[in-house]
Image 1 (cartoon, one colour):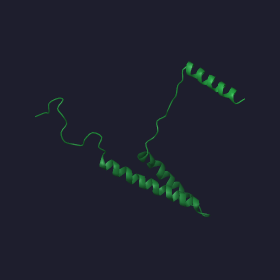
Image 2: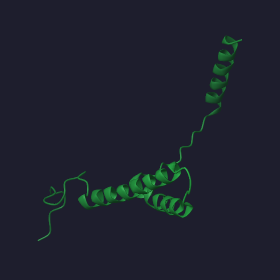
Image 3: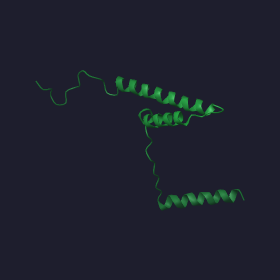
Image 4: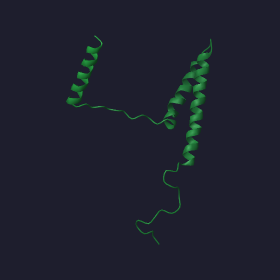
Length: 100
């Protein structure tokens, strides 16, 4: 028998509960990225014999996986109307006058 429309939710995860598998996967990827960054750091600390193959591979792995650990930042755009631009220009002029 189907559930009546508007009936309360029963069973399953509660809203906002993180997915355990996703959290474990992110932790695993985070460890891989961290270990590759440690490898890169240790290679650069060597006084001689920098292994570019190791550094390149470690950078490629870290770059490919870091997006799964740290979310990408959305581009921020700021738009100012003419009145705001005029106000900012006046404020800058006042500051310039103070420091003359």
